[in-house]
Amino acid sequence: MSVTTLDPKSALIVVDMQKGIVSLPTVHPMHDVLKRVGLLANAFRKHRLPVVLVNVAGGAPGRTEQPRRHRELPSGWTDLVAELNQQPQDHVVTKHTPGAFTNTDLEAHLKSLAVTQVVIVGVSTSNGVEVTARQAYELGFNVTFATDAMTDMDADAHIYSATRVFPKIGETGTTEQIIELLKNYDP
Image (cartoon, rainbow, N blue to C red):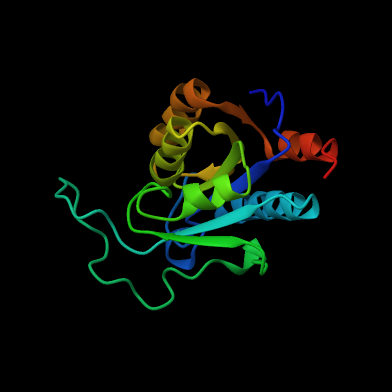
C-alpha cells in the first residue's frame, strides 16, 4: 500500500458513518475505524480541504435475492455519528443507493470547488465505499483509499475490495500516510 501524492484540491468523502450502520457487526472494531475517520476529517478541515459526510436513507428500488434489512428506517438511523465532529462547512449528502454520486449533488459540489482528488473512507468497504469510488473514478477524479478507516460486515468482501478492486481505480494507504501527505500541503 502506497499513497504517492494528494492533489492540491482533494476532498474527503466519509461514507455511511451513521448511527444505524455503525451499530451493525463489522469485521474491524468500529471504535478504531471511527477514530481514524475522525483524525482524517480533522486533518482535512485543518488544511481547509472539503469534507463530505454521506449517509444513506434507503435503497435502490430494484429486486435482489437478499432481503431488505429495513422497509422503514428506525428513528435516528440516518443520523451521522458524533465522532465525525460535523462542522458547518462540511457538505452532507443523503443517498438512496449504494453510490454517493447517484441522484445527488456530490459531483456538482466537488467540481464547483475544483476538486480533482477524493479520499474515501467509511462502511461498508464492498458496497457504499466501493460503489462511490467506482463512480468517482468514472467521473475523472483521482481516488485514494484509507483502508484502515473503513470496514465491512464480511471479511472476504473487505479483503477483495481493498486488495483487488481499489488498486485498479486508485491508490491505497493508511490514515497515517494520508495525514503525513497533508502536512506537506500548503493551503
